[in-house]
Length: 81
Image (cartoon, rainbow, N blue to C red; front, side):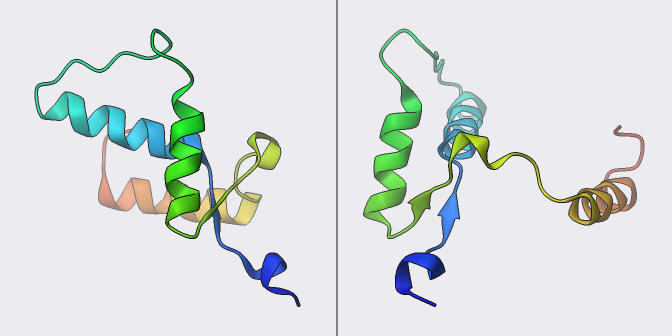
């Protein structure tokens, strides 16, 4: 297996979501779409950290992983659907 096949990847939009909510929790007022594509900057941040950008077409996790996450949500966050 080559190093390229072994590279870790992460969806840039997940970075955008994380940062957006973190800034809002700090009382700031982030906006999306008015100042360019935030996914491009998030992708560049991931690249600078040695992590590749996952393609938008990567889609959700496999069904068994979705089931495991649903079970974790039920146990860790009762009442949240």
